[in-house]
Image (cartoon, rainbow, N blue to C red; front, side, top):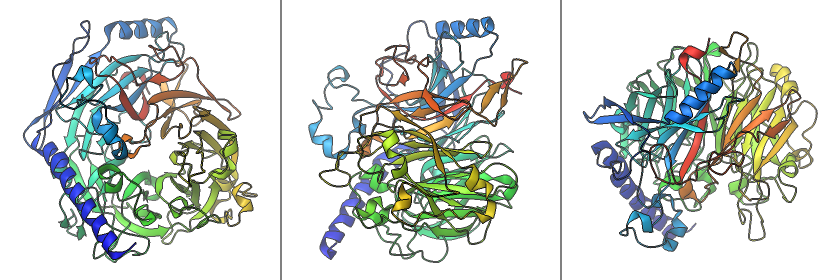
Length: 619
């Protein structure tokens, strides 16, 4: 890139970032954005609002809109079939004109000045938690029984929560655009309470919260992918200082919260020394280059280790979502942390994932090690392995010992090996846009959501691919312990990794035939019903749920459906066709609808979900 072009690009990004920071983050801090009041809930629904005071002295709330008819039917059915209710809680955003991808802005119909009824979904509405009946056998299976809206903030862009819910947990949920973390109480489902909210001023050294992990004491770690709210040096809780290039830039951080959303610690993800300047591009540039943009996060408390994956400098996604000017804005790094003192996590290692055999053959943005989105840890005592996956790279990596001072990461699976099972018409598995990644509790299966690839991603003749969810048998790989030798190093291994490597157990296309039509996120149902009628946690989940939405402003949107997937004893996955939308009657719950329990706000964007039951229904 020429010097002049590079400077112009920096100027453009800087201006847009400043505008977005002022209009977005500062408006949030000031409480300047409020939910419209013109639309109200259905006549037979009585909203119940709970309000708390934020650190800025302003009121923040959750408002439940429990559908009495749906709730009664669900409860009657539960009593009739002797089953306590189980719910799928989905964190969703209101769809409106702000979700338009930048290249499509000029094609917007009408004018923002026109009334709402002439410009569909133009005005922002409330973001919400949708509470869906997930009780097998219930006549209201798949019905939305409550929408718990949040306010006064809108345009949170609801993103991730923790990866699994356990009895007594609060739910931690983040907003990409508002840099806010909400803490929900789900002990009295289907109603939700608001236990706390963390505002940007409380986590000044980071922005763009992504994912969370709740520890056994009820506290939680959260990844803040973006840089400090304001450019310049920022002092963390432990007194260390790092310099950042501002909101949605770099470096990000990890924040530890208590169950009320109060900050315990802000911990720097960046090292004190510069990271590889060739791989860690920052815009605007930093004196100490860094790839520290943590996205995925998982924890092994027994091993006193946390693993986070660096995805991207997020301003190129949420503030100026155009094609990245350099592939080096998509990260190749994984960080392991020492959490011997849980309230003072420290980075133990920063490792650059190795390139694979197809690196350099196509767009470098789709090299195997590019855009490390998620990580997942093993669970069983004695196992120390951890996995990481790359979104645009379309590959899965593994380290046999996450506790090592200098862990070795190897590529162990290329999505090329599964692409034909997901999409028979696909030419290649590279750039398949992987998403959610989760080990089963027994460490035998690795589940992975695959979004698919948009047409033209690999060139003008690229027709793209469909997406779905795959299940990999990882028993041999994990069972080998620190002696695992699986490593993809040749082109032949892209489709046949070899002995000891993961093998495809099952592949389920979602929206077959539709390019980039697969899910971004998912959740395993870690709850099972005991003979005494109460739920307990299980090591052998029999179903999972997927959500088909990424970030609309990137142009990678999705069809906004939440699906249920059955897992047979042999590991084969199939779409649960009994989990139907209450409006269309088709499998999967469709969030593109005109009306919700909280009113006629139109389409919504479901990003993440959790299987949950009321506190009194689980032991």
